[in-house]
Amino acid sequence: MSQQAARPVDDPADAIADTPGGCVIQIKVIPRAPQTMIDGMRGGALLVKLSAPPVEGQANESLMRFIAHICDVPRRAVSLISGEKSRSKVVRVNHVTRAQATLRVRACTRRSAAVLPRYGR
Image 1 (tube, rainbow, N blue to C red):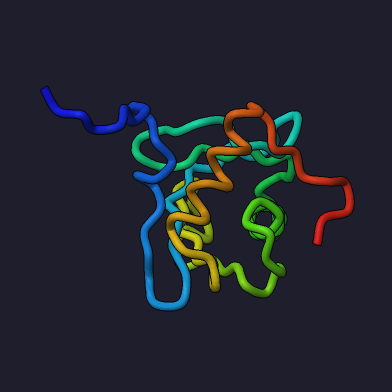
Image 2 (image 1 turned 135 degrees about the horizontal axis):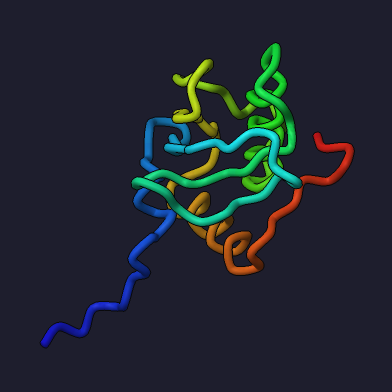
């Protein structure tokens, strides 16, 4: 029997990949939720509920601010790579490794609600 550390079935690390200069995160978004929060995993992607509506880019901007808040980076370090008009999105975070992002996401998920402050970055 192997002595490997037990890994949760829905591990956020599965949705995060290292890239030169940062990492990318696979995200599934649910807009118009009661509050903005991480709500586990869905289909191999991080599930993020957003309070913003999917109108005129409001949900995308809310997502970018929320990911910047979680990863503790300025908003300008976060960009949307794909999924501008889709619920499935790929987000790039500069200056944060996969390991760092995974730790931060896990910490938020353990609390069950990493809520965006009313006036985010």
